[in-house]
Length: 109
Length: 112
Image (cartoon, rainbow over all chains, first blue to last red; front, top):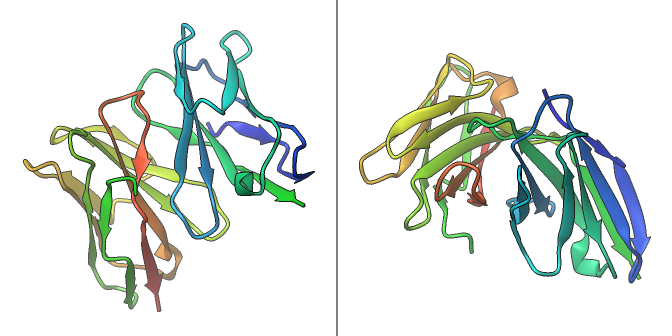
């Protein structure tokens, strides 16, 4: 089943913070976060694994609550370049990565 | 540049036709994934290969098939094309399962 992301869209002023949430109805093994700008390929941001391991960019932070099957992506001191659609993807232990419907983020001056 | 190469960049064809999309993964990556992204839609997982073997299957239509060759490049074959198959098709690669996936620039398929 497709994970649910919230909010669907958010508009920030440069320098503001945002949190994007991802929730699944089934047990998760890993959560992946990607950002996609219009007309471009998704770009890897972070992966969080069951057990606490994380891999990702230094300026990106995220959390993974295994019991609640939820993950949150934290964007701090937003920049214009943060604009795009953020997708979370989840796996339940197999190889299939199921993406959420995305959160559109727009950062304005 | 992700290191994943997809060809062609654009493909325009008619209903009922057959096309082949090609993907070369990043050097060293053994896993290849195919995704479909329709207009303003999310990424729909189609299929995954690891070192030549099919490892996972998503909502891939029977008219679609894929394979990964010994040199690790992969091809996605779409046949009996319908208008609804118009979409952006992405290939991604990773070292292995549960590892970061790196996406190619995609092939935009337009069915007329």
